[in-house]
Image (cartoon, rainbow, N blue to C red; front, side, top):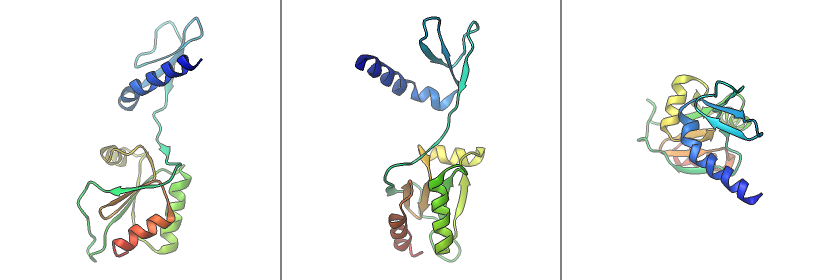
Length: 153
């Protein structure tokens, strides 16, 4: 059983780049084994596997943002929130910004243009919050407060 789990785990890790770049299909063969591939077999019913973004569920991670610091006309750092409407952590971040009166640009990763920006960031979940040169993957109110203070917001 452990060997089967290990083989499946290795397959999933090896197939991850395929999942990220092309449509993937799942089907079951005559022996009941599940298969994945980029082309469904002609003689089997196959279902498309959804390439969905997940929410960051663990502790938020703060790093340096790759882009140079962007400033608004008033000299304060720009805040950008990459989010999805279904993400509860994104909703918490938006509520925090509203309570604190923080202006921010929201980018919905379920739209094509924002998804391209999100992919270029190398993100793997939502929310992703950029504050000046800092980046938070996930949501932690205390850490976000600290990020905002350090940028003069």
